Image (tube, rainbow, N blue to C red):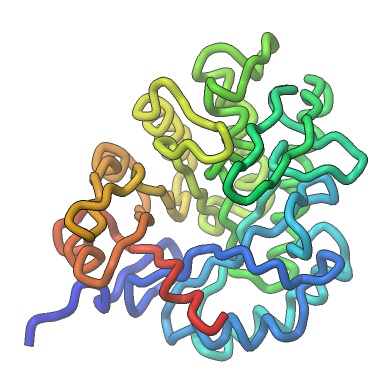
Length: 320
């Protein structure tokens, strides 16, 4: 009987996966006072399989990193300790668990304190949801190393919690991407202007985390083509390729997780444009693709060598 591509094994750095279906990071807003709750052990263990890879929901690296209510963090000892039984529950199922380290930047609602960003430009209010985001404060140059250090310490804390590794959230209009993309970076210092400068902050975060916990425990999520939260770039291909080149400088960097360009709906079906192939060909490690795949499409991209692994979100949200 012919093998099902998504159900074939794959070695990702030090981790031997039994299949290629990845749980994508899914925000749940159930971590009261930013502390992971015991019920998360059931949620994640239900989605864990022997030899599978799970990525935890976006987890804040500091108090200023939070933008949504009741989202978890990993910057205090209480949070570290709260994650431990959740991670243990996943490991008892034989799965591998990565913590997504996140900072929302300007994607924050009004709480009396201006969120921080690459810019002081406010996100356009969301007409559909009525969401109004706070006007951000542009980070001073001397403040940026402090944020880099927040990511570094959060990575160490995640490993202390028992996670197998971390995924740096460099996608979906959050802080790292606010710096990377020219629509949201209007700085005139060494963190703004040309592509290298705009990516400098993200590269410093990557370097710091790799130095702290090792490249073989670090992945990243990127979305160069996506325009969430008024965050887009005039040359997404150049942006994505530059970041891949930076990742390749770290031998053993475990994976690059990229989000497809926006899907088109044709005859009631999602048509995925497959814009990630140049990045997949250029990256030296495991390449994970995400973007609304169904089972048939996921099997095809693995069979065709378009991606090593496929991240799914919606199908895992059922009964979540």
